[in-house]
Amino acid sequence: MSIINVNLGVKSYQIEIAAGLLDKAGAKIRSVSKAQRAAIISDSNVDALYGEHLQKSLEQKSLEGSGFTVTRIVFPAGEKSKCLTELAKIYDRLAAAGITRSDLVVALGGGVTGDLGGFAAATFLRGVDYVQVPTSLLAQIDSSVGGKVAVDLPAGKNLVGNFYQPKLVLIDTELLRTLPVRFLHDGLAEAIKYGCIRDKSLFEKIAAMRDDKELLANIGGIVERCCAIKAEIVEHDEFDTGERMVLNFGHTIGHAVEKCCGYTDYTHGEGVGIGMALLTRQTEKLGLTAPGTADAICQVLQKYNLPVDAPYAEADLLAGIGMDKKKSGSSITLIILKEIGSSFLQKTDWQALPDYVKRS
Ligand code: GLY
Image (spheres, rainbow, N blue to C red):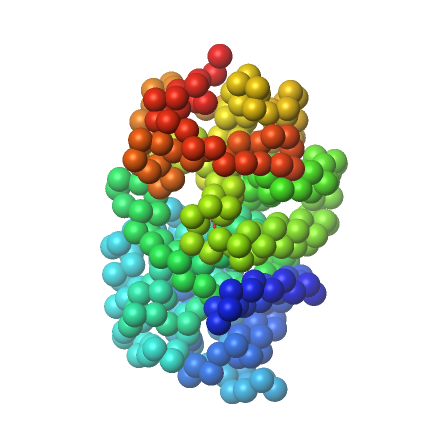
């Protein structure tokens, strides 16, 4: 078991990481909550796999206190559910279950669930405590930590949201064994990103794995390292006004790729991988990044069947970037590598952006 503290004053919390943690979830969650009722929010896929398991654990009495009265709220799996319509249904279910301000929401699932369930918790009754139990690699190493919660609008992803820290993040790495391989690799793209921006040895460790079997055997250490990097960054910049933006390496072009395909052909991690590769090719040419960096990124992405380019014209990618949250006024903040393991923020004029998105 490994514990990482996220030190944010009165909003501090722990990330607990271990294989088999779901069995102990009830007692762990009781230790941070006096709630009488708990609402588990999850999608249809995750609820079928783990909903009952978590419900039983939460209902059980433990040394830490009595069991919770549990309601399970299930929404259809997929990014399309991260919307205001599904959110309204969740509010109705929370109200029908009699959830009060002293009760608890538990978000059990991947990034969509953490964002949607977390945003429901942040806003229902002006804020109810919540716990993240992430089940995908992407959620375990990124979206469950740091309190970013949101829903999408037709105009773009995460356009309605908040910063609302959980009371606890429980990461059971055993749950990754049921994750389809494409989504294991999807999350791995974010782990590669952590290596790129902050930790060359993490990058090299991922690059040196022989196959998915070896990857899964070592996944606990990778999750731990990524969460530790994220916790440190969030502690320095909770509200994403500076240092935290480095976590968006690859995301500016990545979000545009996701938008161009209507959030269907490419997953978030695949988009991020393409974004890291395309941007770094150009920053190398512009003399901002050490030669060979883009090749190193492409090699490790391709090893895990992650794409390094997408069939969208430069103009379409630029249009997709138009609604990027990081764009402010006439400039956009790009996250650029000096080399693997070292990154910096660069405010870039909107007019200069094509230089960073083109392919030649
Ligand atoms: N996923 C990026 C962040 O939490 O800031």
